[in-house]
Image (tube, rainbow, N blue to C red):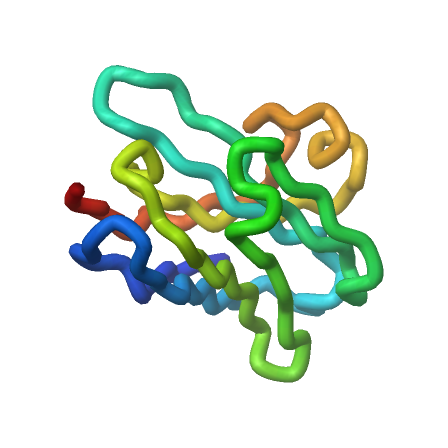
Length: 126
């Protein structure tokens, strides 16, 4: 059974930082592109960022460029999202996802991903 488990969410004031982690049981972990999505109440799931198999390529949404950084550690089977300068509009449940192909990542949608985590809540107060 493949599992992706997110952690690191919480309550933070605007301007603060959080670091999200996702540990995946997929094998080999290096065979999957990893991504972060988020979903706010009443809204559809939104693409945030993705990193390729070996970490050489990244793809970030315009809304988080310059503030969020995605990275991975294949030895630890983990992907991270460093979130700085947080804003109230960043409040959402953040999900980790894995895809065997890069096409879904380039599309910027939540289709085509093979596995999903259960999410971790991030709340940013003003």
